[in-house]
Image 1 (cartoon, rainbow, N blue to C red):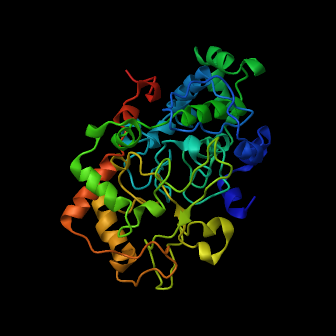
Image 2: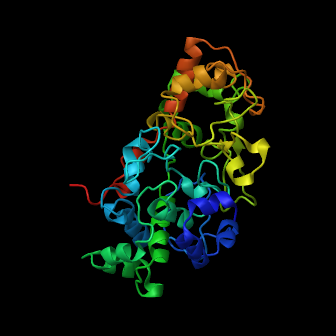
Image 3: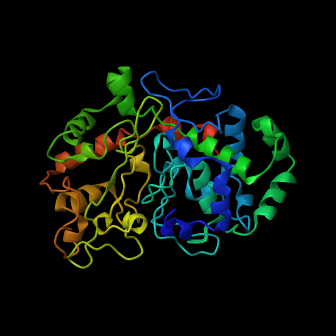
Length: 381
């Protein structure tokens, strides 16, 4: 484990990793359990850790835990505070405050098709387990999010004293007699997160299900631009979920993509702000300065603001003030970042082309996902 990851996880989290084999979970290709994913025929099933097979009871328990503010020290925030369903399970903020009001350095990532991701955060390829990642916002202290570091007993006591959770844990985890523990807690949350699948966007329905009316003429022109060589979008934003990070049960290997898009160049030699050096924080390799994981474009029209630090307000600005200029650093008075990806070459554009690209990106919005009651807050009135 690298020094940066140790800074993120307190001692509790390091010890808790022994509860499940991370390497085996990431490599295990089989899908266990009788859970109905509800996937279209063209979509391969996700991989599932062998020690955490999916079940409807586990997903429902995870939904309750995901939306429960009692998982935070002062009962003020839940996982869904920073991952709001109608906002694509992002939160509409550049960065999010924890219970102490202090903001982290990175934007809350949208949670969609995370079951297909081999890496779960902006810049840490070692964080490859949803079960482990769930511990970070609850117990992490750099930054403080839900603030439960050192309060494991309090958290478990709250759940054990609840009128409904003991029975729900028993149904979800009969193999351990419904034990309410950090292991079962995080396995349930991870199972709910794996159920957040979006494959009903207009583009998917047009491309794979023959719904010719699902795409407008503008969106179809935007598709041609998106997959063309002028804009180069598809090189990083292709594949199953419009990201070059993917793993599933039919794939013999994991695909990982971390890229420097030239968003910053604070010293003229390629440096990013000290609070956000990207992948270099984990690898300590100067060549990884400014590299971040490619985010999905699914529901991208609902997940503003954009980039790892939420520093670009609109999709139009992402296209015209960042990628068109070989990286936004040029707009800020610096030359193009010398370490940026080879695909960030800049381009000329017309207003119609940008409108068509935006129409295509909007066609990646899955409205049924954003309103699916199976994902919604069970505690809402």
